[in-house]
Length: 415
Image (tube, rainbow, N blue to C red):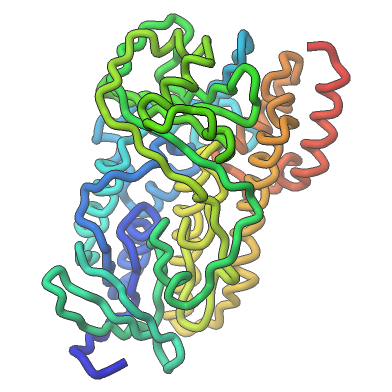
C-alpha cells in the first residue's frame, strides 16, 4: 500500500449493524479503544426483523436493554406455524433451557440505529459513509484502507480487526475467503404492508410462518410491528418463481393468493410499498478467523431466513469474539479456532439441521404433528428461541439423530 495518512487504533470493527455495535460496545466497556467504520448512513433498510429470545441476552450484556425496552418495538413471545388447516405455536416462556421468555419484532432501520447509537453513547467512535477498500494482513498488525465520502483515503492500523459487515462480507471479498454454500439457491420476495389484520386467529405477539398448501418448500413470513404494519415475504427455490409474475408486487400477491389461510389473515391489507427481492443469500467462508482478524455474523456465514437465526448468530459471534479479544489484548494466548470458530459453528450447524429438515419436510412433520409431548415441544421451543448452543438440550446435542427419530415417529403416528 502506498503511504497515506496512517491512524493507529487498538480495535477496528467493520460495520455498525447488530454484531458490530454489540462487539464494539462490549470491548469499549472493557476499556479498549474501538473504531467502527460503516459504509452506509444509518438509519438504513435491512431485512431480518424478527429477533429470537437469545438476542436479548447479548443486548443486555452490552448495556443496551433498557433503551431497547423503551423503544416501543412489537413484543414477541414465540413463533406460530400454519399449513392449510393446521396451526400450532411455540411459546418462548416454555422452553427446555428457561432462557429469555420474550423478544421483539423490529423495523431493522430503527433497531440497528438504536444499537449503534447506544454504542456511541458508551464512547465508541463510528464513522458513517466510510468504506473499506483494501486490507493487508501480512504485516505485524492488520492495516486497512478506508475511503471517506469525499473520495479521500486513509489507512488504519489496528491490533485486531472484527468484520461485522454482514451481507457486505468485506474481508471475505478482499482476502479471498469466500466459499460456496452447499444450500440450494433460494429467493425471497418481500415488502412492508399496512396490515389491518383483524383475523381472530392471528397473534401479533408471534411471527407467523406459513407453509404453502401444495409445495412445502415454499413458505411465508408474516412479522407484525407495533405501528400496525407488517413485514411479509415469500421464500422458495429460484425455479419456483419461473411461472410467477415477473413484477415483484404481483409475484408476492400471486403466492399469497395460492395460500388461503394467509390470504384470510391479510384480507384487509393495504399493499403500499414496492416489493423487493434477494436471492442466493446463503453464504460460507473458508475460515472464520486468521492472523489479526475474525469474522462475525453474516460476514462469516448465512444459512436461511426461515427461523430468523441470522441476527442471533451475529450477536452470539460478537459476544464470543469480544470476550476472546479482550483476553488477547490483555496479553493472554487465545486459540481462535478452538474457542471461537468451533463452538460458534456447533450452534450454526444445529440451526442447519433444522433448516434442512424444514425444506425436506421432516421438521415440518414434527412441528405440525398434534401429538408431541410438552417436554419435546419445550426442547424444540428452545431452538426456535435461539438457544442452539445449549447442549443440555438433546435436540441440540444430537440434532440429526433426534430429529430423524422424531420425524419417523410422527410419520408412523396418526395425525
